[in-house]
Image (tube, rainbow, N blue to C red; front, side):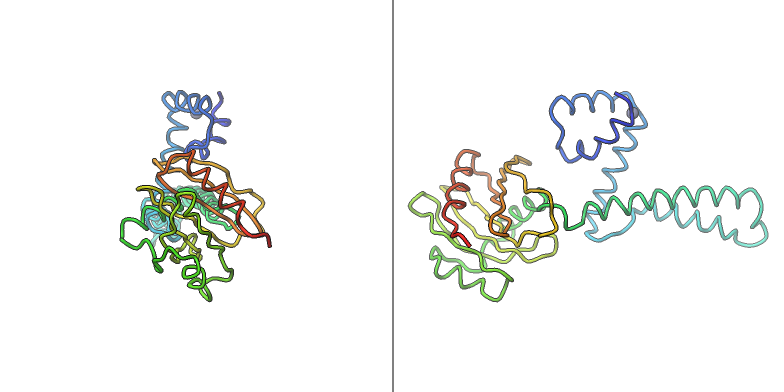
Length: 255
Ligand SMILES: [Zn+2]
């Protein structure tokens, strides 16, 4: 497959969204194409640095290149118009162009048009168990958990009692996804914790939330109903998690 076609799919590859056969083609191509490998390497580095910093900051190597490019351009004194200056302008524009591409990609990735990102949902689930901050309000009584959210969100999440189906309500907490407060309801099934994330659906979003995803050892089920986005995250097996999703969705009161 030609490089161009590969590079169109490279972001999907990075996100683990390619079909198995596309994935194999990609890996075969990457093994023998330095150019595409370099593109992948750069994308990885960018997404890692964006994740690490959490805000929009250019990677250090890129910042260095921009700085040195600018230094070349300003010429620093007498040799302002020699060949170094011309080279500097060339480097500067190339760096600027790649900065624009990076900037655009970053903002596309962070734009609110994205459905709740899988990694962030999993991270929030893992975090909830790691820092012993599973619940802000610990109760198996929905009449205690539901009113706790009053005034903390611009919507009122339905809290359902699924005890008779084996899903015990543990409590609720306020979590943050894409820097926005979301409701997290916590249920327990045998030894498995299930986080149910609920947030107001972005009306501008055209992408429907995906159905089922398995990633990093966790299962995710997402759906949208009555203007709210729901996401279940757990290490519970797919079958039972689906069962719970069906229960929740069917019992949620119509608007
Ligand atoms: Zn290639």
